[in-house]
Length: 291
Image (cartoon, rainbow, N blue to C red; front, side, top):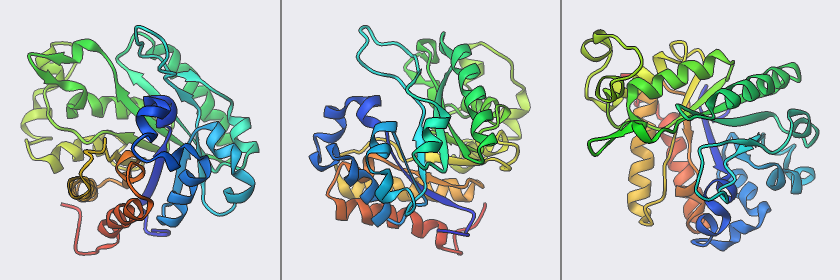
C-alpha cells in the first residue's frame, strides 16, 4: 500500500497491555519477538507497532526493512485493583536510536490520570517531530461512568471524536480510534458540551456516518484516522468478515487505514498474513470509494 495514502499497520503491544499469556497463548510462536515483526513484514504492512523490547531485540535485522513504531507507554496490568494509567516505558530518543520511524502512545481520555498522560505525550511528540519521526496516538476513553443503563459509550462517536480532536491538538499525525458503535455519549451520560446539530445534521445512525464524524474531528482528515481491528473472536471466518467490514467503513468515511493486531496474530501465520492482505485489498480496490 505504499504511495496510496493509506496504511495497514500491525500493532502487537498486547504482551503488556493484555498480558503475554492472554495474548500469545492462542498462538505461542508470538512469544518470540522476531515472529511479530516477521508477520508484519510478510503481511505487507506499512509498519509494525510494538514495545521497546520487541523492536530493540530485532532492530539490526529488520529496522531497515519495515518501519518501526515504538509504543512509548503502557498500562502495565499487574496493579490490583486495576487502574486507568499509562506509564512511560522509555524515551523518544531511545526509540530513535533503535531505528524507529515513528512513536506511538496511548492516552486514556476521561480517566483521572489523563492530565498527566496528555502532558507527557505532548512533550514526547514534540521531541519526535524534532527528530523527524511520525507520531501515532491511541485515543481511548476510560471512565466507569461512560457505561450507563447497559450501554457502553466508550465507543460513542460524539465523545470518541472529541478524544480525536484532543489528539490532533497535541500533534498526533495519525489517530488510532475504535470504530464507533453508537452515539449520544454526551447527552445520555449528561456531561460536557455538545450541540443538537451533531446528532441531527452531522451524524446519522449509519456506521459510515458515525465514523465520518470521527474523521471530521481529525481536522477533516488532515491528520489520518485509522480504526482498530478489535479483538479476535476465535473464528477465522468471523474475524475476516469483521476486519474487511471495518476497513470498508473506514475507507468510505474518509479514514486512512486499519491497524489490526489480535485478529492477525492469534492464528496461524499464514492465516494472519491472509487477513492482513484482505484488509489491504479494500484500500487498493478503486471501486470502494468515499461515501
